[in-house]
Image (cartoon, rainbow, N blue to C red; front, side):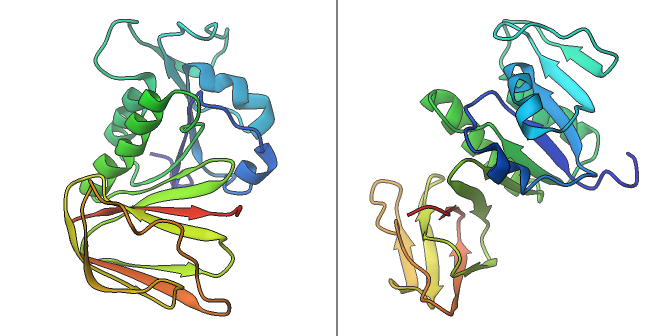
Length: 213
């Protein structure tokens, strides 16, 4: 791996409307993988690929000298899941995923669970879309959330989560439990001038930070 390529940016095909917002997260030294129709975001993101993957059933395969992995149309992995596996094989530990959430709920959920996979492998990962930042809080970790966000939500999508503590937020919790069938830790707010702290003792939670109220 090149020394300057410290993070892997993976671009999927879900809609992106606010390119300026998403570009704010992109680093000049990111290793960039475009997945199939994620290539439609190439001009809007203004970043060139280091690798292209896909079966090209939804986007014409480009004529390019960029390394391209052509996948079969009938396969177990989605193009995005394959791209993540390839990035893991190449040794990346930090991931930014864009073009991951949108019209297709099946693909959105599949992409969100990529965060869980990467978290369980000890990797750092975040999904960014037009409105939110999405990442996992693994057990034993404390996440800080500043008051620049309109809302933040905690969602249990990997079984029961216990020992959840929230401090310096409008709705605080102390050693609480969240079950997948009862999601009550949604649309919380950081107290103005404070930094909220979220800790999980057992299990992992999806953290969604919303920029827009």
